[in-house]
Image (cartoon, rainbow, N blue to C red; front, side, top):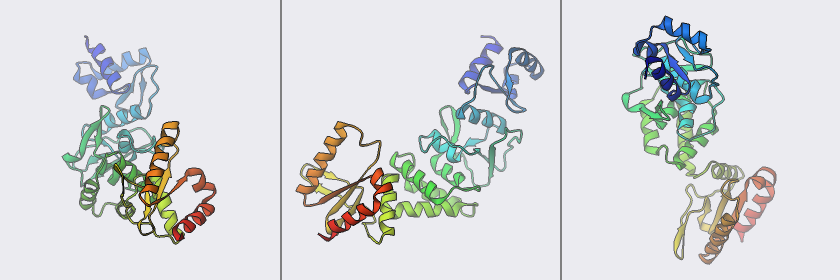
Length: 303
């Protein structure tokens, strides 16, 4: 394959973009490349990065272009790094990269890209996801809270989701927090981490239910009790162990078909046979009929 064909293949692997330094590595001069690129309809993304003709960059393409412009030591981080790892929705704010402060990072970046120059970044923070250089999940959380910082509840939700999907561990977050002492915004991550440890919720929705119950003066167990039943142990979302009451929080995705209803029915019977009272709550009741749910729950706890 000739040099130009190699360049086209490289651009395809990099979500539609190449950097001038990659062009020169393949034996083409920058001037010759620009001349042919203009003739064939390539689009200049930044001073150093060009996009294949007819290409529309998605979020991954924009991240790829930003990495190429920022230098070989840059990593995707923050909300973008978590999103690449399957945590959270597609970010709507600026692309966020991190680079070690003692290494060069180009400033010829497209608008909407934030590069964090960090004194605490180490080689162990680096990884790769979807062919993009990406920080570890724990490091992504540190860079997520650097100003402009998201609110605590958003960080807490992402932590719960990351822990539930086994993208990050509590130990890894604690270690990252220790190394990041003094980093701007780190108090937000510390608060969110303590909140997650305090409640021990397995989903964002059960965390919201737990906190709202406490706001109404109820005191669910800090961590849900395990209910031993004939054949298997059940793990409720929220428990009041002294009253033997178990709350199941029904997300909209996990309770959508007949099989889900069958499993819920079996669990309901198993709770009853074990001497526990099961109580279910879904998003609609949480959003529109919360007062009635709390009144019913108080009666169950009292009875």
